[in-house]
View 1 (tube, one colour):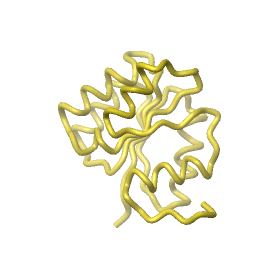
View 2 (cartoon, one colour):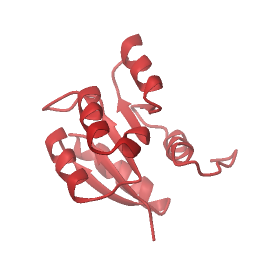
View 3 (tube, helix red, strand yellow):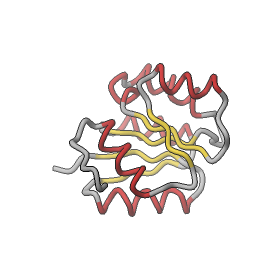
Length: 128
């Protein structure tokens, strides 16, 4: 049974890139294009990992993460934030304090794969 990842991003091209990359790694991938859709998906399904864009049309990634933490504390601890914007010290501090990771856009495929496996506690090979 494959593990399931929720990708939350309002950019279709980003969702498609992550979906293709993670499927090659053996994951099932569900998408949400805004925070409310993500919360609906979490109510309907159990996810092993969430990748959340920091800038969503209806709320920022920190607010969404706080809502997720109220619904599913385990999933909140297995969250990767993604952003193409330079992040403030406060945001980076929040990511670190919540045991969540951060991946910068534009994505480096190897870095994304490594971050996903590290958060899930999988062994990571040096050449990934």
